[in-house]
Length: 155
Image 1 (tube, helix red, strand yellow):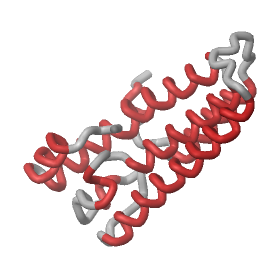
Image 2 (image 1 turned 180 degrees about the vertical axis):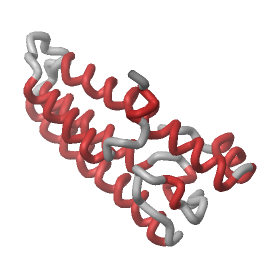
Image 3 (image 1 turned 120 degrees about the vertical axis):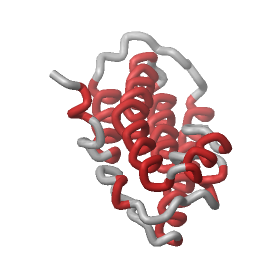
């Protein structure tokens, strides 16, 4: 079985839902954070708002550049987006998803939830982001390489 067949196949939003379900339904024997309820309440809400702002900022920049938001077909990209939130992260939508999952992990306060977040980040990096980077490198060449040297993949 080739793992390459998993590249760009599962839409990131589906992966977020899978990760969230795995967090929710996994056995949670180890309480990791043990934070006061009030801290959890405000922290998780702040992280959820932050995640939505990050995601919507990324979508806004793509729309402003009039390029595709389709994560399963990066070869449709018509413009290198390097303004707005893309000055700080090359993958704001995926970063926003990870922040949302972090909020869920903090709400659950378990080690298992944090491990599923880590699996999400590793999977996204290997099977979504790296293949996107290869496609964008073919399309935009040196401009994309320069962009990658200036801006980090996640944060």
